[in-house]
Image (tube, rainbow, N blue to C red):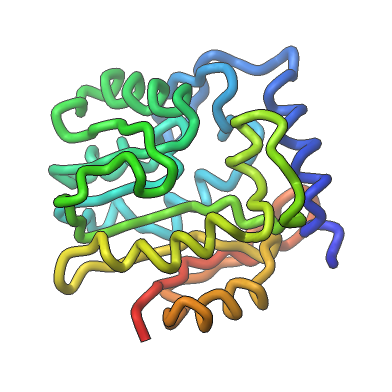
Length: 231
C-alpha cells in the first residue's frame, strides 16, 4: 500500500479538519462564498472539491437533471444549478451536510432548483426519480472491512471494505434516465484494483471519462471521472 492510500492518514485528516482552531464558518471557492457548518467536509482544507469542478466541466455543459451523492457543503450541486441545471438533488448521509447544502443553495438563490436530501447513497430518494447524471465524489480511500466509523464525518474520507462502492456500482445505473450517465470521482489514493474487481462482481463496466493529475499534499495524484455502465 502506498502512503497516500493509508486509511489512517485519512482519519487523521478528518479529525484535524473537524477540530482545527482556524476552521471558518464560510470559505471562498471559485470566486463564490460558501457556508461551512461544523462536522461537514471542509473544502477549505482540501483541494479535491476544486478538482471535481474541473473534471465535471459544469461551466461548459450542465445536465438537465443531476443527483449528487455525498454532497457535503453542496458546492457541486449548487454550481450545477448555477450553470443551468434545472433539477438537482443533493444527498448526503450526514444530516449536517444536508443542512449545509440547503444553506448554500439559499445563499446563491437557487433553492427552487436544488433539493437537499438525507440519504445513505440512494436509500432516502423517491424511488420514481431518475436523473440524466448521477455523480459521486466517493470516499475512495479503502479501509479494512472491520473498521467502524467513530463519527459521521469519517464517511466522507474512507470506505471500510469498499461496501459503499459496491452498493454504488450495483445500484447507481438504475437511477439514470435512458441515455443518462453515472460518473464516479476516484483517485490514485483509492484502490483501483479492488474497484475493478467489484465492477466484475456486480456486472459493471468501468471506463475513464476524464482524468487529470493534481498536486495534493506534496504528491502528484491522478484524479479520474469513471463512467459506470452495465456489462
